[in-house]
Image (tube, rainbow, N blue to C red; front, side):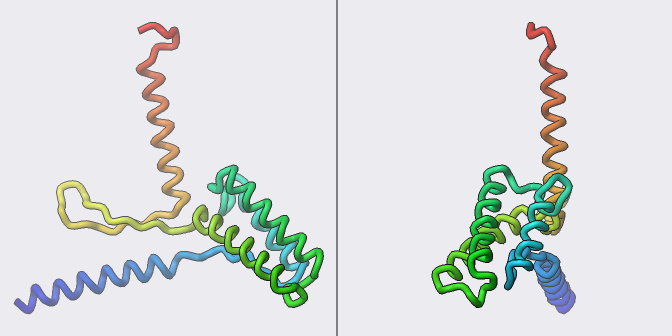
Amino acid sequence: MKRKLWLSFMTATLVLLQVATAQAKEAKPDVKAETKDEFAAVADHVRQQMAPGGRFEFVDKSEQETVSRDLSNMQSLYDKFGTVDAMDAPSKIQLYNNQSEVNAILTKNDADREICEQVKPMGSNIPKTVCRTNREVQQENGSAQRYMQDMQQVQTPKGGRN
């Protein structure tokens, strides 16, 4: 009886540690700056990282347009006021809303973001936690899509006749 209780306790502890580790590893992008010069550096970095191979390469075209629009809006606020402290209340609210939207998009599409899921290995009913980065998930999805396209091309003759 003690053995079963001990085993249950250890299993629960391991699950909690895995969840805590997964949460601790997730680094959130923070598009934030106090001055015009700081913001210019942050905005340039974000734009560079949205290019292929960058940390935010999985941001789709419509979200890239949203990020670019919000960065431009924030830049115009910094151009007008110079610093966050000099902004009036409505401008600070606009800045905050733009920052929140950009940070949400970048966090969701961060290639380094860790995604964990419970899977049951073949032949077992005991679930296992598997964690991968967003980049690994996207690469696996791309490989699977390419495989499916290749299989369709093999099954469909080039001449169009069946």
